[in-house]
Image (cartoon, rainbow, N blue to C red; front, side):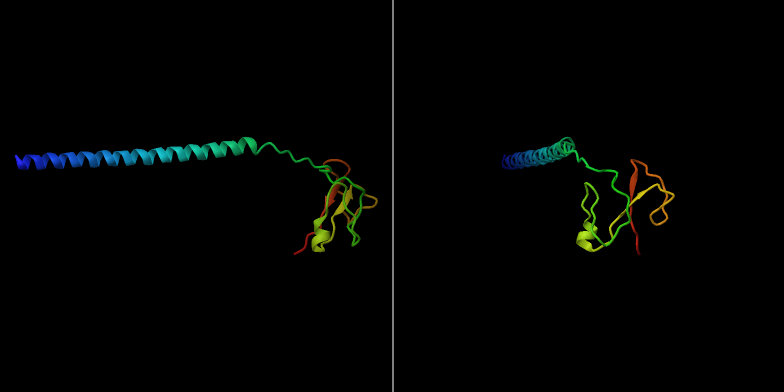
Length: 123
């Protein structure tokens, strides 16, 4: 009888070990499921709430008096020229379609409004 009891005890211990492993696996799977669900909720929330702010520009087409950029700081209506003020860069030009008096020889037509922005590029 003694060997049979040892065999039954061994089976009982294996059974407990198997149940414990399944329980640990269940807990692990629940944690993964909750983590994935939480990430999904955060992404969904950002998609819905992140779209709420609308940025409105006061002068989106840079309408202003046509002029070449000068060393003297003249701002564009509704805009702050950080390049001139902060980095000592030349200010942008305000162009218009004027074949009689083009600024730097540029005679292109504006796409929106009567004037457009021209910028100097350097290497």
